[in-house]
Amino acid sequence: MQNKQILPIAASAVQLYKIRLIQHIRVCDYMCGGRHMATNLQLDDKLIKQAVSLGGHHTKRAAVTQALSDYIRNLQQERILDLFGTVDFTTGYDYKQQRAKA
Image 1 (cartoon, rainbow, N blue to C red):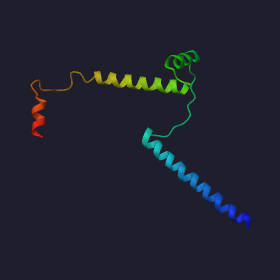
Image 2: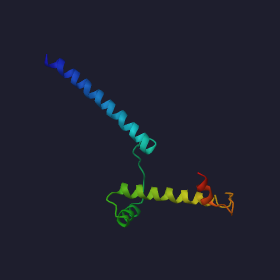
Image 3: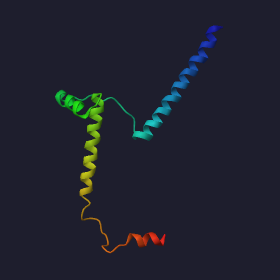
């Protein structure tokens, strides 16, 4: 009789695990735009140690994440430079007058 009670509990635990996993995946998709997976990289140990030390990071992962964020931000800023000279504007435009109409 005791075995009959264990089976439903185990099944409900598996069901709960599946629900939590689906919730985690949805949150991950929403916040990060995708799922994460482990990545193995061969990085220069001296550079990593220097980045951790200079950045005041607690882990190698934090240092690499910060470095990637800075790199992406830098590339995005460089793309903005490509817009110079391509945007048309009116030199006599009065933004205050436009606000008054609203």
